[in-house]
View 1: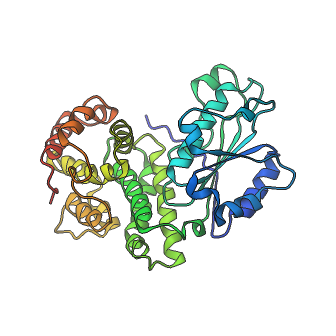
View 2: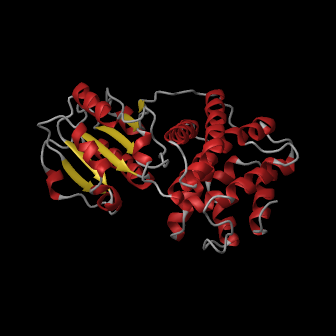
View 3: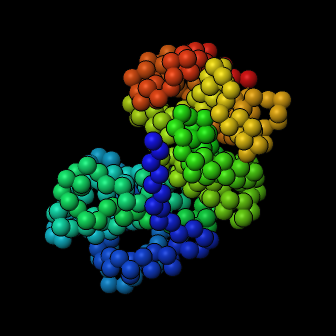
Length: 354
């Protein structure tokens, strides 16, 4: 059975940040926001724009992402009433930490209180998982909470204008990983497949001009649209490769995005080795891969043009350790034994797949 739940709450437009934030704060009557940030986003024009979008007479507090990751909240958070809204500005790390903070606050608020409003404002293509609405945790259901977590995403492509080539490349790799896995995996989810194909096409067409810092505002907008589609596709539980890469990299203090870049072509090649690749022709069309190439070869060629390492050892990873870790993770449980065997063999042989 396929369960489809797409309750996304997204504002998407150039220069939409201030107007969208002001309107949603007024509509939700949010009065005690906490702004989550990192060092890179604290004193920026983007932060000034964010603050100008918060209506007057609000009690604004600031929280560095490092405090959330260390599970150390400042003393003012002990006061009553607690924050009624969380606004996160930054890259994937900041937005993901804000989602974790929402979970923490949801567990500590009184049963009759609504969960805080969460506003995610990406300044790169690095959208996190967790942007869909209306998903209750078992704890919330048990406590009969009437309001599911409210998650608002404001995608303003003008906020990405300061992104480095590496930031753009990293966001593109995550988006491509999410879209490809949604299209080759065993799950049958028509909306995810549709938005994944659209996301891939937008990214493949626009990523290299933006990486080369010659992209137009329209191309940056298309890239963010592709990243948004990828996040929506991944929300349906198909992003197991990315989840494995992030968990493994946290344990090994490696880079999850580089690991995705290294593993994705090998995962596709593993599927190709055991039978016809699902959505083969559609993937080639979206990624502009010549018909003479396999999807895995075409992916490797595309990814090799991005400013990220294409070698396990250069990136600080040991293929044998990756295989051992993989066998105990959910990704191994999702793959068929034949695909898993091909995948681990390709990781052991850590040269490029083409």
